[in-house]
Length: 245
Image (tube, rainbow, N blue to C red; front, side):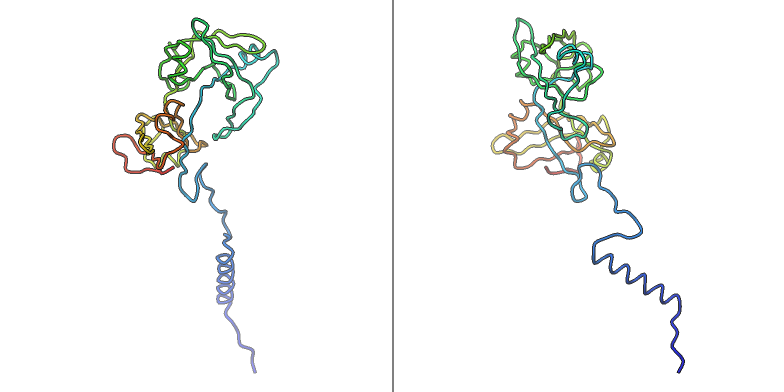
């Protein structure tokens, strides 16, 4: 009796089906890498974080050495949510007019091209400085102050601001919300008896950022952020897309 023959195409089809079935059973992908999620995404969608940004300062390399001694560099103590940024071990005293002062103001790293102090409104009142609301880095024409460190002092002619609220996001986040770098959004915080809608949240989009809104301590207290029952970020001017926190 002659042995039955199986067509070569049939054999290849059977092998491919067996491989496909095994892959589906184990949840593994063959022949192509599993696509990575954008930074900060969870389960295929943006994951909104709202952080209270307490008073802090940014320093140049030169000012780090002046304040903490020749050869000094910032020493990371705690990583921030945005990759590559950190709270340093070093702190400075910020001195305003008539010797009003704020001790132990945290330095954030890495260093920058211009030193800058970011305060909440109540901080600026305490210092006696009329600090304007500005976006980070926009310090032309702003008030100055004196910074005091363990090794020296720095007189800033400008650089004291109340940091304008903003949202960091990557380009996939921006596409999800239908916005682009420089646009404005609304942050809606629902809390028992003190819900707040924050207007004019600046979009700061780049390739590597994770979705995170920064508000200051006054704003965080005003909306009782810790007790929030719902948080949404929407495009200002009637955006339909929102992301819960």
